[in-house]
Length: 134
Image (cartoon, rainbow, N blue to C red; front, side, top):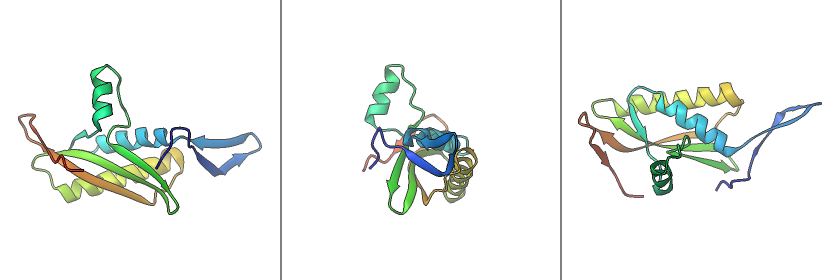
């Protein structure tokens, strides 16, 4: 489980000037933005706390993303609502590829896994069908 003060030490980025550390929250934001830009994704699904925060005017950019710093490496779980009519396997694969490539480009972090959880379908009438089981 990630902690708020936990950082990822970029060992290969150590130089005479110091070291580079990346917070898991930064990975959440990058992952969320990379997933949301894939065509076919309607929204990212957050938890109750992010919903309340957004109602109070705070924007949650890491919404719908969980970062796990395990012994096997860093894995991310992405919770998305897709548009009705898209090929779910194709869009999920594009999400995985876009997240993986974006994180390598921006942070040089190679993820051990990118898990895409489709938790709902958005119909054209803006109605969202969501599976509330967790």
